[in-house]
Image: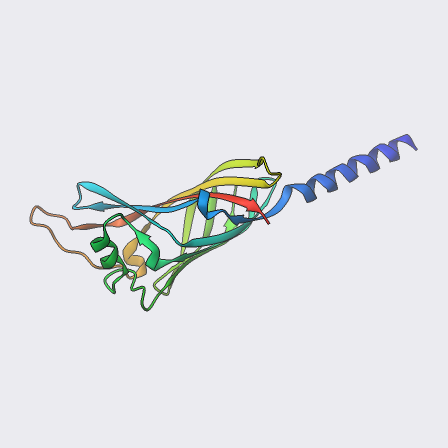
Length: 188
């Protein structure tokens, strides 16, 4: 009888802890960053970010079960207005025609996340590295989690083809774009 009672209590605790540890989070944009880096003139790096983005994700015991993100392409910001206007043009994002960039996770392990990235209406499979920050309770009693996704894409795979050759050899804009997505989410 005592063994059955202990087994029932343990089962209840396990079921309860599973329910508590599974959570859906909304990206807290004031504590998150969607950034990128790309080579310029083959000798330096330009960094940029997107100011307008949103997303949700589902975590269970530190493992991603789902994740989706949405970026407004016209919110690109490299700190130089002329360059940002060029990035919004048909040479790059063509934001008048393709306003949204999206990512939807298709699978994840502890260290890698794979999903479909759509830019300019072109969708490609991308795998990103996961650096999980953890889950905490904030001073107001909300559950928060944080992580960083990193990886790279070839911009030409998404129709971002503009470039110019330079006299010394090479091109103005590198093809590889490094992605750095730093996220803090709050449980919904």
